[in-house]
Image 1 (cartoon, rainbow, N blue to C red):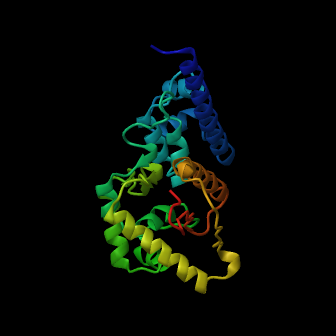
Image 2: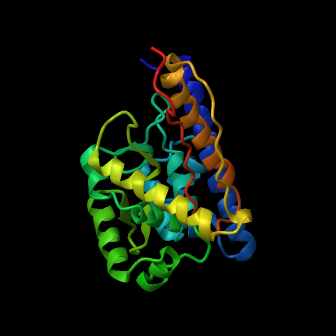
Image 3: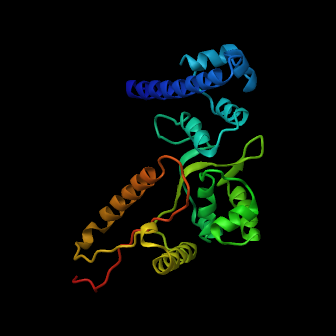
Amino acid sequence: METNNQKTIDSKQMKSSTNWLANLLEEKSKKNPLFSLRAFARLVDVSPAVLSRVLSGKRKLTFNLAVRIADALVLGPEDRELLYSFYLTAKSDVMSDEFKKDKELSIDCFNAMKEWYHYGITQLLYIKNFREDHKWMASMLSISELEVKLAIDRLIRLEIFDRDESGRLYRTATHFSTSTDIASAGIRHFQKQILEKAIYSLEHDDIHERDITSITIAINEEKMKEAKAEIKKFRLRMSEFLGEGEKTRVYNLGIHLIPLTKSSN
């Protein structure tokens, strides 16, 4: 049964998607006076009547239409994710099976991509002037071209990446994560690599390019679960903050909270 709250959320989502599409059409029209609603509809292979109803908010944007629009306009990863985000289901804030805003990786999946550069590659897609050139990507990450090729193949196989109709790579989710409370050899391996990266950065990177700080505190151990939840919220907020505007480099943000003494209990 659809609630009033459900209808309100659906209405907001439809308004966001129609505004975005309308603005996109307006930009195209300014660049090319001959670019009309009919031309736009022909470009995305849909009838002008259907497109008009979508733009007016009288018809919901389907995932298939969103994909056709993204493919026809050759949208970059960020615009593609923005367009797909309009297909969020209001009840659960989860995308369709083809695209999700947040995806929690299984342990088996995480173990398969335990090498740190898998996550570096998923972020390279957002860098300005990105190109799927193995040599360029290898140079950016300081790894081999073979590692790049195998990593991309693995990310596609694990459904972390996919390709649009023109063959361009895109991520199947905005954020990837795994539970922090599950013991896994893959997770340990990955975190060890990140800590080693932090040590290397401490010794080689200019202080203006990094921030490695710590604080020693006496804590109430009963607050550990709540502290982890707050740290997770902070990571997401910082990710959104640093991701605003033009992206020029891939970073890793690590927050460490570890015991330095035995428990008084």
